[in-house]
Image (cartoon, rainbow, N blue to C red):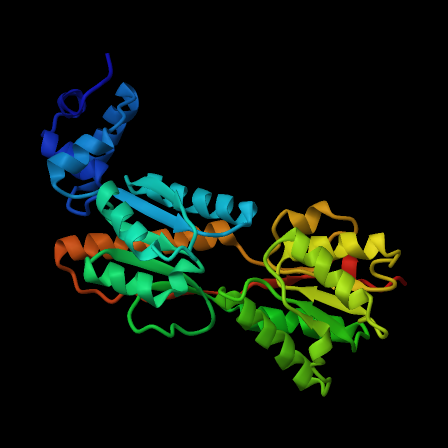
Length: 342
């Protein structure tokens, strides 16, 4: 038979309420008592029933992750990061993929929150950037943490995790300039993602800093997909004066651009250098491997979940502690796709 919370309490020599407090990671339990309870849980291989726990405590211990992102690597890293933080804090994770462009997205999000009896939500782009979704969550008093591209939070309040894509994009472009590239093409991601504009502005800023013109013919509208990279690179490399380098808005686009360059008999990096963004497996599975900006998605997800859980616990205790935003800046990773042969 499966061990029960009563069995754990009996073995540890404490009350059922104390076991519950340990499971829920409450601060009021003394360290030695917590150790006894954890030892009993391990010995009995006790697995808490999250549904029963939610009902008994009249509080939810479930966190939701609602996403709309075509990049499977990004989604998996996000899920893994959120799940690790949930497990270490006694919370469950509920995942809900959606289409953010759906005209009924606000009602879909609200229905999902109510149906799943969530304690809070982790939101990544584009949902974290949609005022109508955020307003709806505020109306039903749902706790959430946003992951955003940018150095500042344009919406008052928080907490959120900010990723300085613009600065990282500027560094990638400056790297390309430093290895003698003056005509640098840029393939954008989806327009409804703030990261697209932030990375584009970083590219333009670096060009401006080095007195290089941001030629409109070198900026191609794309999406966060391999196919967009293929099509975008074909357009760029078919120009009368093609660019000597291409900066793609993410690694999946860059991998598509590399594929297109080879189809058109361009040597990479001799004829055209190619760089991406995010440092997902696409950047390491191509040949040559892609120069990129390393974005620790799993760690970002863990930090966002940690902020959310702190917010939830503080609210339940009536603690008005201000929780500060977290900041990340992706780091430049130079690989063979932009290196000049010696």
